[in-house]
Length: 327
Ligand code: NDP
Image 1: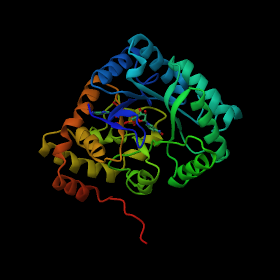
Image 2: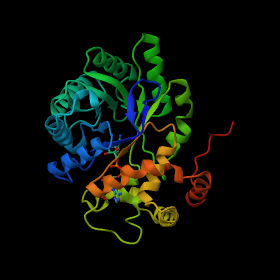
Image 3: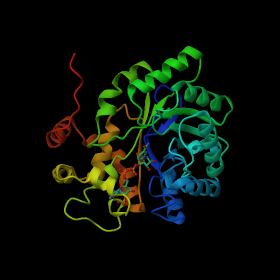
Image 4: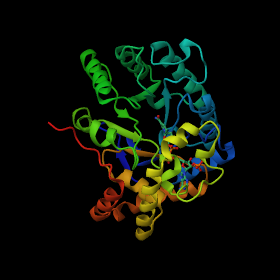
């Protein structure tokens, strides 16, 4: 495993991490969650990602039980939660980034995860109903209380992140240090263009999600629609429609040929490409099977295969390099 610092912080984080969305508490049973988490940890993964909304709290409950049973020293790993969507409750006070919900969601996450503090606590989306100032103060206070160590955002705009920093600087509060954006061969603009200045000005770290575009970038949908996969799950039609377009599949087929020439799998090439970007602090992996996680963890050893020439070939296939706005 390789480690880096999370943005400008001193916090060491493994470049590959492991997340629980749609799998923990839902698609896979607890025995498999346990095997996957141990596999990740044994390979040096030190960050496990979670959120209140994942399986409506069950993802945190299951992860908490595995952490408790593991007897891993608390100082050997990082665990996160995210607040905004709620844990399934439909009442007005059960979601959002207002002080009441952020504090209550934090307490509930600590209880479900069976830990004394969260290492990272994310605002899962911006909340247009709550002044950013209220959220910044709340996060700062949670840090002061020892309930969270660092806080960040997910899918916030550069402007919203900078507003949080402005408020923090004005009031001598601790601002957000990390953003969790989608980043993969098909979703590039935020990480490559929008946040460009933020890496320099506020030292933004990134924990990026969906490196395989929910499995499409493994190539398994290239010529058939396998059963027993995420994009066949009832209720996830929106995710299938987002990720499985004819254009994306054409590109994925061409990328798979290139990966074969390099002697690696398309999943490994796709993850190695994310890792090659130094602005990515950690790539959060997802897996529903042990073989997938083993394959994906090996991506780190293949980064060197992505030479400038290979990257050029990939750009030729993708035709989606984000451009900076003209002056
Ligand atoms: P991926 O895009 O890598 O998708 C993971 C899924 O793809 C697996 O569950 C599996 O699904 C399939 N897969 C993985 N590896 C392989 C392989 N080698 N071969 C074939 N199929 C494979 O990542 P996720 O979308 O899961 O995102 C990772 C993490 O990021 C999440 O767990 C979560 O922690 C975080 N996240 C954060 C979000 C946010 O808003 N902040 C949003 C989404 C995710 P299957 O076998 O069922 O097809």
